[in-house]
Length: 388
Image (cartoon, rainbow, N blue to C red):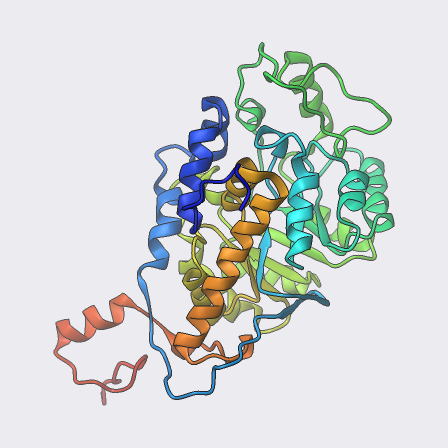
């Protein structure tokens, strides 16, 4: 293992500890900052613990296959990297290193519009990687069309639209006061076109121009325009309601990405794992469903898959790996999750991803409810119905 990573960092939480020891305070605060009181941020992780595994035994799990197909791309395992901003804050090689780490594990990465590296630079760094692009909504649809064409031309295979930010707090996006630039040189080449950037990131001029070009309070009509102006499948990120999931499917959206923005935006939202089943039911198999928020172990991954997710995404854990050891650190974090998932599958009686079924997971409330009513056992997930 590289000398840049503590030799005992063998879990995602240990990578978090090492990364936080290494990163400057302002970067730790930016990456780790929850919204308001932090309830949603904490609950994302805690909610996974409220779901219990019911393993199936005496099955042939000597050989396991963790591969999965996501929007037509075969991944070695169902953990991909979520869009997060300004990876240069974690490592000088920024998103190029993150893309290399993902590609080395044959999984996908979503490149943020708020990235330091351009679409072209990331494609060149990981030409064989599976890459999606998170596109902002802009007032000028000509700008959006050009970005869509750049993504298509560079081999990106999906467009992600974040729909849970009707308004932007531009000061918090870059974690600096309006009058102060960032304490290192960053750029946003997937936002600015033709060198039209105004001022240094963090400056009043820069923030004012962002407000001028970015469209806030996007609508379903904007989503439909994107879908009609790209050859790529479109994924909506930030879905928490079954009604929005159904509306997206009716519009022909290919992927429903269950997310509460890692608890960074509106506090008081439900944990993503808690709403997943309702979303899956509303979608009815007409689109793929993904999830992020609170995934820290391979057991978390299996629980999300059992409840209907096709793939999960990680945000902060990838940044922790990047901060510790660049591309290799990202690879190590992904390898940990893959190994943990592999082991949990074996212990749960699953030889392949399709073996992971809803019957493997039960919410802890089931046992509490049965104890409260003094009901006898009647299977793992079934509470006896009243004869009345």
